Image 1 (tube, helix red, strand yellow):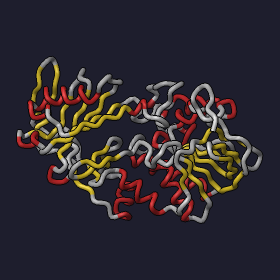
Image 2 (cartoon, helix red, strand yellow):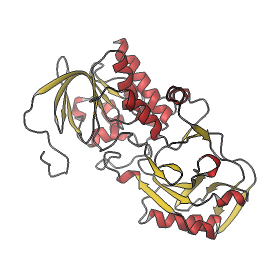
Image 3 (cartoon, rainbow, N blue to C red):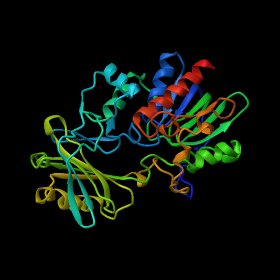
Image 4 (cartoon, rainbow, N blue to C red):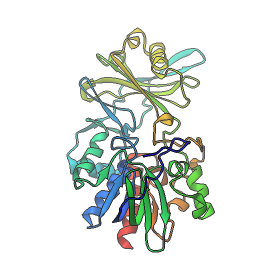
Length: 360
């Protein structure tokens, strides 16, 4: 494989062309869900994932006593698509801990709020990656290829041609199951070959979590609960504007996590310092700290286009409608009209795409 000056892999030399009904770009939850549905409907499908692992922005890590999520953490009452998969795969879940006071840090003071500030929600006991594992486990061997970026998708008269770092494929349809702005930024889709309104929406739509740093601190015990605190804290002007309990059932593993909206030089140090100011000296001694700046993760957020605040484009009709005479589908959580940004939104986008392809 050769690398162009901009650091992106070029299309390899001429290689045999393989044919398939549908190519899926991206092995996050939406890509895996739509591939699963298509294969069960009898279609031939190949999924190409640019990174080394499945899940996209769903990332769970093993920690002593359980798992911690560095991507999506919750699902919510009424999110029936997630609930259905939880039931299908028999996944253990538990309630988000909300008992106790919340904290607010403002104007140099920390004060307690003695009322619930978190709506009910649920957590995946073995990490959100358990959903990904369930879907991937149903796919036939060889369906997904990792470490294989799609470099270009081209429109022909009767099919689409998909160039990957490992070969060339033709397909009746292509599903872009990565954020549209990432696909546009990578040069995968030529904007001149889209309707101007579609190219504008695809290029401008923000990547959910694309500008977020998430930090996780693991402790020997959930000491904040002993202080009558829920673990939830808000800090306008603080590096991490939100902090929440991410502990497992019965407080094991004991975990606090937070979101920061701006890049930080040392997010782990900043997070521990903020937790210490909020929760006291025990917070200064975590057993482990993990941090991910999602804006700097490969194959996650645009680089050339940067970040935008056009959240009004979530669920845009320009992206919920297929392009290229119904052959090119936009299928990430950003394109969902239901729960955009959530895992539920990713599944809703997959459901919409699956319906369109099977009806065609």
